[in-house]
Length: 89
Image 1 (cartoon, one colour):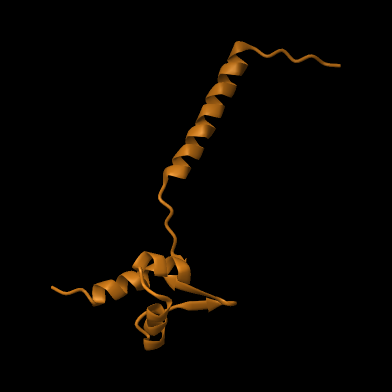
Image 2 (cartoon, helix red, strand yellow):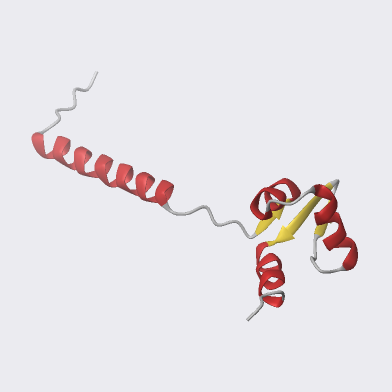
């Protein structure tokens, strides 16, 4: 059975590595959650609109969407474009 000795330098290096990893995790968690594609529920909450109004925007072609399986996804840039198009001076 081999015995490994741990030196102060080993402990200091371990501490520094651990602190660096923790900082990276904390910084990653603080970055804003930027999603390109939003689900119907998220769009309704963001725009504070009913399901019927969102459906009307889809049917009229004012708001583009993508259907994958049974879910509808909306590109965030399309939502911004809709707002900018309807902006009044």
